[in-house]
Each structure stands twice: as structure tokens, then as C-alpha cells.
Figure 1 (tube, rainbow, N blue to C red):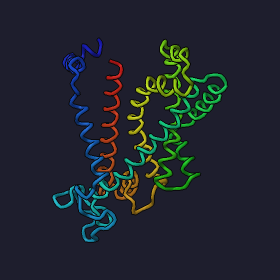
Figure 2: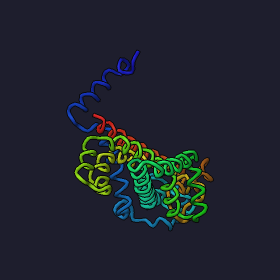
Figure 3: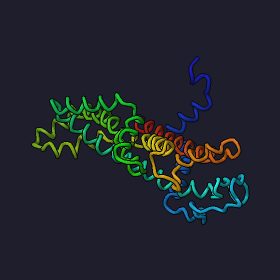
Figure 4: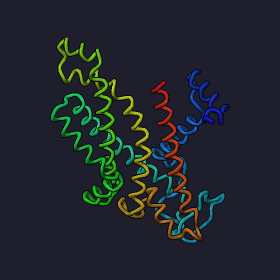
Length: 285
């Protein structure tokens, strides 16, 4: 029995949504989640007026309630405030990581795919070596060499993503460069730079942008993992991964210290993944 037969209502509704061009509700909800987190990053003062680094000792380990919506930690600091203020670091670091991956990987794939020959061979071997190393392990190695802070964690995460973008861009350029309009541009005397920027790059970029959205969620996870292991900014920073790391010591009697930032990370990453999947479906329509 096929999946369509098992879920006819859902399949029919998705097909109708695709035909009508409407945006699925799950995508709207995911976009709203990302918008809220971006709002936290830009203007945290609109959400909370507490200081993320200052707590009330008498209120330590206060359970979630009307006064502290997500509870407090071992120093009496408001957990919601720390999550909100930590979103700026987490989101900015993920954006930097994706930008590094897209720019460096995109340029490598663009040059290797269009120029071919020894350039393609060298870039291809470099990409193969990078892909052979697990991304998180490569990020740990790079951040260890650069130093322990969130900025270096973002750079390390971006370097670990270069190979993924380079491989996709390389495949797209190889597909596009044999097209009729590329041959016509060469016949008309177009320079290599002109052909790359005006014809090859715009036609090869769409799947890379879809991957960039997905990689943004992966970057959040990697950076949170690095912060959890102590490779990010030290306390009293409030990076999401660091909050989970600090809360694990009090997991039995104050589980909200782990559950709250962990749920925020999971919801944000799932939202980014849903948007990326929808963009990919739209591209393939």
C-alpha cells in the first residue's frame, strides 16, 4: 500500500495547496517562529526587562510560573531573559556560518565547475577531503585552533559547511554550463567573468539558496553543540548550548533549565527545516 493510500486526505490537501499556490499552514507557523526569534535577537528589551547576567539569589530554582514564565537558574536569573538575550548570539553566529559556507563554497564550486581541467581536479579533491571529515569534528578542530569564543565557533561551523555548498554548486554549474544560452554567450564574445556572473551563477544559485536555509538550522545545532562542550563564550554568556550545559547539573530538581532552551533549539531548527523543504518543493514544481 502506498503512502498516498494511507493518507489520502493529507496528500489531497497538499496537492491542492501546491496547485493553488497557497502557503501551507505549517510553513506560516514556521516563519512566525523564526520571526519571533529574530525579534528577540534585534530588540530583546521588548520581551523582557530583566538583566540576563543578574539574578535574585532568594528566587533561585524558582519553577516556571506567573512571575518567571520559564523559571530561574541556580543564581536566580530569569531563564526566559537568558534565552531571549542568547538568541542574538545564536542566530548571528548561524548567519555568519552560513554566509561563510555559501560564499567560499559557492566560489569554489563555481570556478571548478565552469573552468574544469586541473582547477576542477584540485577543488574536487579538496571537497572530497572535507566531506570525508564529519562536520562537527571539523568544527571542533577549527575552533580549537582559533580559540574558544562564539565568533570562532561561527567561523569553524562555516568552514565545516564549505564542502557541502561547493559540491552542490559544482553539480549545478556542470548542469548549466552546457546549456544553449551559455554557448550563445560564448559565441557573442562574452568574457568568462561576464558569463559566470550574468548567466551561470543566477541559474545555479536557486538550489544553493534552499540548501542555505537548511544549513542555517544545522549551523544553530552545531554552534549550540560547540557551546555545550565549552567551545563558545564562557559564562555569564547565555548562548543556547551553554544554557543546556549549565542546566544539566540541576536536571533532577530543576529540569526546566534543560528543557526550555532545548525546546527552543528544537523548535527553531524544525521551523527552519520546514521552510527549507517547502522552498525546495516550490523550486521543483
